[in-house]
Image 1 (tube, helix red, strand yellow):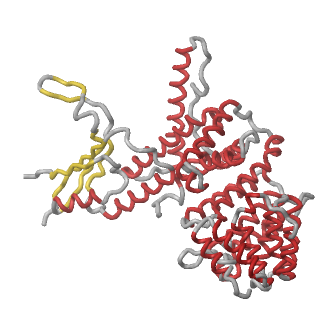
Image 2 (tube, rainbow over the protein chains, first blue to last red):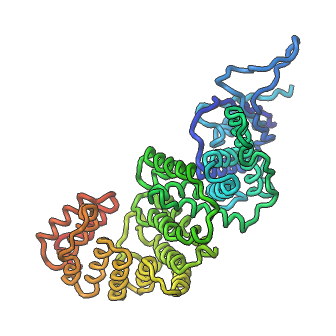
Image 3 (tube, each protein chain N blue to C red):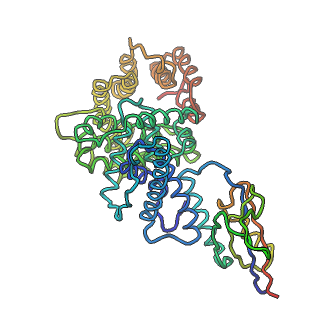
Length: 113
Length: 415
C-alpha cells in the first residue's frame, strides 16, 4: 500500500501550565528523542514551531490576524507519512511532552490526486 | 532515561552552571532574572534540538541563548527604570557584549563561587540548602519539597528569604579570606545535601541517590580548588564515598531496608571504597581534626570489616567519642552506645546512656526508643524492651522503618 503524507497541525492554549524543571525538561527531551527514533520512517518533515503574529492575505489586501480564536494558537506543524489515517494518528498520539495539556493536533491527509 | 548525545542530567547540570556563570556576570541581586533567562534558554533548547537535532556545542549554545535573554531583560528593566527616574544611570550589563568563549575552568570557578554565595551566614541553614538545591542543582520548588519533606509553600518561603537577603546584600567578589570563613558552612551544606540523599528511607531511592551524587560532584569540585583544599574537604569526600559505596546493599529486592548485619557485603562498591580510602589518607594532614574526619573514620571501619562480627567495634566507639567532642550531640552518644554494646556487651551499651537526658526531639524519635528497646531486650529486661519497642513503632516515620523495627525488636529473639 502506498504511503500517504499527512499534515499535522498543533494547536495549544497559551499561558497554560507550570514551567518545567530542568530534570523534567531532560525527561521530555529523552522521550521526544526516543519517539523520533521509533517513528523515523514516518516523519517526513519535522516541520517547526510557528511564531506568533503574521498576516492574513485576502483579495481585499493583507491584514494582521487574528487567525483563529485568541485562546487557541497554532503552535507548530510537521509532515508524517503513513499508510492510513489511523497510523498517522498513532504516530502523533505517541509523541510525548510536546503536546502539553490543553493542546490538540489536527491530522489532515495531503491530497495527491 | 537515555538522552542521545547528552550526558546524564545534562539539563540540570547546565542549569546550575549557567545560573552560576550569569550571576557572576550581572550580580547575584539579579538572581530572579538570571533564573528566568536560564529556564527560557533550556525551554528553547528543548524545542529547537528535538526538531533540528543537537547543535555542535550544546553547552555553548545554551550559554549564548541564556545570555542574550538575560541581557534583553536587563536592558528593558534599565529602560523602564530610566523612564521612572529620569536621570538614573545606565543599568548593569546594558552594553555588555556576550563573551565568546566559555572556559571549563571558569565554569568550575563560577559554580564554586555560587556555592560560597549560597552559604551566607545571615541565612538560616535550611534556607541555604534550599537555595543551593534550586540554583546549583536545578531542582524546582516542587522537587525540593519532595526531597526535603517540607511543603511547597515552605520551600518557596525559604527560597524567597535567601534570595531577598542576596538582593539586598549582594556579596562583593568574595575574597580568599571570606571564602575561608565560609568554608565550614559550605562543608555543612554539602554534608546536608548528602545526608538528605542517604538517610532517607523513602521509596524513591533513585531520586535520593541523585542527591548523594550531586553532593559528591560539588565536593570534588571544591577539593580541586585552592579555596577548598583543606583536610576537612578531603574528609568530607572520604565520608561521602565510603557511605555511598554501601548504598545499593542497604535495600532488599523489594525496597525494604536492611540492617548492617544483614547486608550482603559483596554488593558494596569496592572501587568507591578505594576512592573513599584515598581521600581519607589525604585528609590525614595538618593539625585540624574535624567531625568529618571522625565520621569518615567510622565509615571506613565498616567498609573494611570483613563481617559484622569482625568489625573493630572498639575503634568505632572511639571515633564516636571523638565525634561527640567535636560535635556534641546526643545522637552521637546514642551511636557510641550501639558500638560499645557490640564491643563490650549490651549492658555496657546501656551504661553509656545511663543518666543521659535526651533532648525532646531525640527522645520522641524512633531512634532513641529503638536502641533502648534493643539493648534492654538483649539484657533480658523484657518489660522495658516492650515499652520502648511500642514507642519506637509508634514514632516510626515510614512503613519501611516500621517493618525493619518489627523484625529487629521481636521480643524473645536472641541477638
